[in-house]
Length: 88
Image (tube, rainbow, N blue to C red; front, side):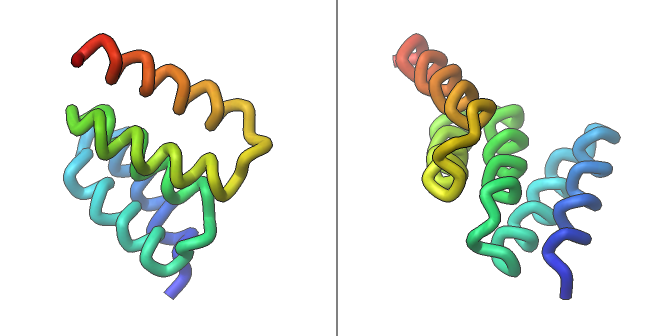
């Protein structure tokens, strides 16, 4: 099984507004490719979008740990942290 297939299918599902199905695809991608930052980022993004902001932040932080030089991830983590601080 190729984790990239699940990742790409998850992207298509997310684009179609099928977030529950996208989460399942991204979870499978993470399971098969646990060292791929982009898989955690995708799962974090859709989880955050669905309203579970703390879990979305946690997943984005994992992604950033795997790819610490990625400016988009660093910005996204910062934005999610700021949103979490406002919610508290």
